[in-house]
Amino acid sequence: MTNQIVSTIAGGPCVRLSVVVPLHNEEENVIPLAQEITAALASLPGGFELILVDDASTDSTARLVKEIGHAKVSGIFHRMNCGQSAAVASGFRFARGEWVATLDGDGQNDPADLPAMLAQALEEDVDCVTGVRKNRRDTFMRRFSSRVANGFRNWITGDEVSDSGCGIRVVRRSALREIPVFNGMHRFLPTLLRGQGFVVVEKAVNHRERLRGASKYGVHNRLWRGLRDCFGIRWYLRRAVCSDRLEESAR
Picture 1: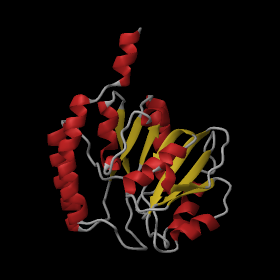
Picture 2: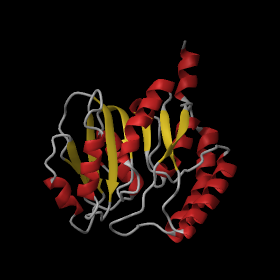
Picture 3: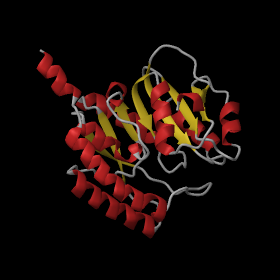
């Protein structure tokens, strides 16, 4: 990925929260979403940054990211389309925050949930707060496929995640160093974190209808691949080396 990324992120002091948003052909959403996020976090103690990752869009998404002109908004631009997990991983790599948040680029996640999620992570001293969508604004087929995938996923992996498809999360940045990068990683992030010994909790979050643009995912390119990935995650969890256990043995 190194030679496939162009970044506008300059070095600087650490901030409290980095927000990473993967984008692919979201020209209608990128400006309204960036405005929402910056407004929701304007008074966040410790400051924030917004990292918009364009995954080689074929529309005007990349141009619009470059034109935002907000001091706290930066862009990462893939030269090749690598998928959502690669886009999220690029954002993680350049993030300067003590904490890193993710949310989808389609506008269905509500940025107003982020301050409360960060506050919960700090108050409960956990490593990740992952969202659970309440009153989902999706079609019946998408809700049904999500329910099937969640049930199968939890059965295979032995984990309990209520809504693995929810894109809004807040994670301690230091914990992300322990997470392997692969296609589909973003869907299994809470389970991967628990597999490394980190503490993950859930929080009910708002979910909104997609008002602009078209969904990039459906049953065929999301459900079936996700079900197959579960077996790979089970293999990984059985062989993962937990850094906490290594540190304990070194004392």
